[in-house]
Image 1: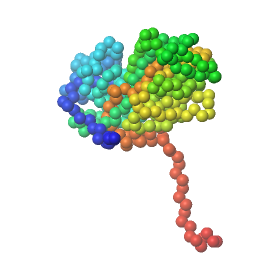
Image 2: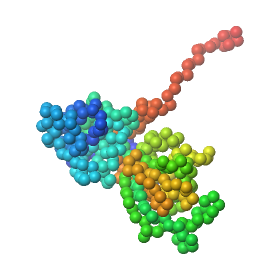
Image 3: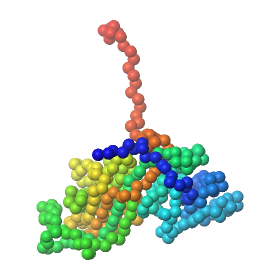
Image 4: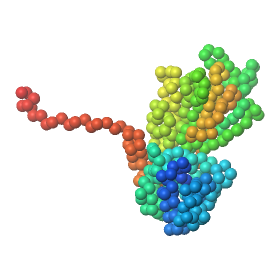
Length: 364
């Protein structure tokens, strides 16, 4: 078995980058000046083609700035959900917080260009670069002088009307026991309809929504029922997402280079239900339990929230399209630096050293 040294993951360009996508956190006026400064640097000094969202380019503050007008006219614009830019971007630069990087990931449902994230938001766990030195840092990246972290994503499918209850179990049915009652459930590939397919960077969250009842969902691994989750819900996350909602729910924090999927219950009504880690590549499936009193709700990186009813299922596995995140220093230092600076990991007052005491003082 060959285990790749994470330090060997370096950014290399097959050809010099030309097209740069700049993602800016919206509704934050403090980012207007850094955005203009970066765009001017990329267009005038580096002769890059800069892509931005149309709503960003049409911002009233930018429209009124006559000095920025010549740069603004050279920007290429796109609209999310209408224009496909996945094949023409060489590099992504994010200005904002962690949510900005999550949004950039959602724009690329296939292969993702390298992402360089500047910390201009609130938390900044996934944004290691400081904007004060952006010219030097961007120049290094253009030269290919940078380490990268391949952040795995989850491939998620929402299938409607896939599970059907049957009074007489056919050959392919599985027997499931719920509170002593044996229920026959089988999958019907003819009835199942994939209504949503997404690449998720942080986590898939299944919760009870507005209902006051416990969420009651079944969790399958590679087609086998492993447990039922009774509580507020369950989080299925990547190692990158292990420092987000999963950490708040009591899960361990996993380095993004570890190939794994985390399953974390949310407020389970059980004293023994601990978070677990399963190998990357397995297929997880979540369905409503047959005796669930209410529906469930699912969201993907905090977006596209929708209701899950009886017969629906959510299929989750590791995606083959990771997010290549550019490191400021290296992939180990950056992660521990984020743990210390953003989450204050293992911060406590240092224990005072004992004063030197001689044997004679001890006898006295």
